[in-house]
Amino acid sequence: MLKIKENDKVKILQGKDRGKVGKVLRVEPAKDNVYIEGANIVKVHTRSKKQGQPGGIISKEGPIHISNVSVVCPNCGKPARIGFDTTKDSGNKVRVCKKCGGQF
Image 1 (tube, rainbow, N blue to C red):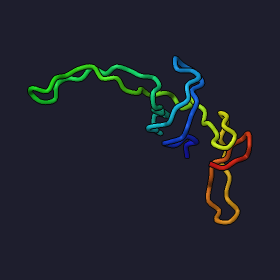
Image 2: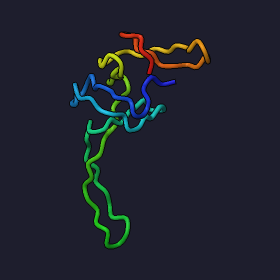
Image 3: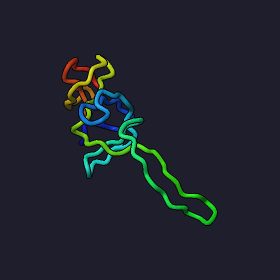
Image 4: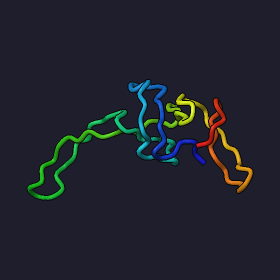
């Protein structure tokens, strides 16, 4: 189970966009990559799909390795490491902030 999920707020720790905070758009568990809104913008050259439709250059988010981002805790508001714990009443597995102990 990955510690980062879609719609999590994360802070980028390394790379050209270091220090930026954004929302996770997509997670690729097989490659350990995440796509963050507004970060690691790459230009992709596209061909025309149909006759009469022009090709062009599109800017979109590129992948960032999961080790280069940290989840921002919604309770304490700081980038923190994530642990797992089970709830007492139902026994479900939940994510827990290592700094403040709050649940996600």
